[in-house]
Length: 419
Image 1: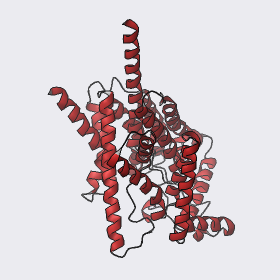
Image 2: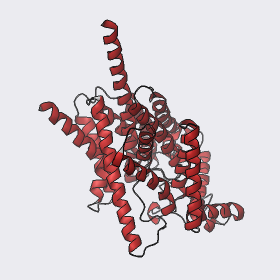
Image 3: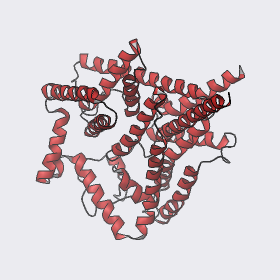
Image 4: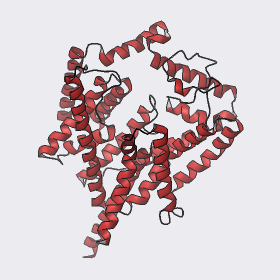
């Protein structure tokens, strides 16, 4: 009974960590307050969990070391303490998520982590079909099928990948198979429904990666046929839709008209301004950036639109940076930039296929592609890796599963050798 209670309590803690943002959002709390609550919960678990400080992994230690000069520079530059705190928290988030993931998941047995992951997938699928019903309700009330940034389907890259590889490895059957196929289709069509360039690029990139690295000839034919079907249906029924936004980008390149595609123009202007500010204060700015909380100013390329007014500060400076590599370098210097990418690449290489357990292979393939797509997606909107606790937590899940499976294999191998 004590063991059951221990596992149940761990499950509850993990579910709260991974779904706290969703749960709290129902109470219409400000997103910044939600983020503070989630960060405090992760930090509290990390600090009070038995022997967590003594067993602190090297990555969060390095992250804190990397933040010291960034914090000192931010205070010296007299940036807002709120912005400084926000940038410190966002840098720590993936490392903190990873550390807490290791602390919690290593206390579960291999098969219980698998059950936990299936449970998370089930909750995500339920959320997805609720969003489908909500979308259908809006359409029946007269809303258009395709709406820019409105009434999208709740489908995420990681769970799409898990669904795809479970289906590919023939690990689900019956109703579950049908539900996962529906989820996969929803993930693919969602960028078209909400006219999202960034999400469509992510979907296309995943198709390419799966096509190249995880497909046999028959599967490549099916993927190609499905891609052509979706593209054809989109062109036939969506009118301009999401493709009009790509046409606007082409028009921007051809005419240099800022307002042809304001969302792209603001990103270009952002890169120009950030790069020139770094150059003006080089070489020290390359090592330490402009510090946590840093603002950039449109002295080199004017910001004429495409960004929410809430991103501007009283002196005209802009805090949020859309292109993640520039955000890291500008706030934390190349020191912080290389540490974050080293973390992602290191564990991308540590998560391995074993070709023995199909479930493990499905999870490993999903997590490896999840790391790639998170890095790429943050080039457009930095929320997938930067400042994301779950990014680190799911990497921890992959690492713990890998280690526990290796231990099981070695234990079985030794028992056979000694028999």
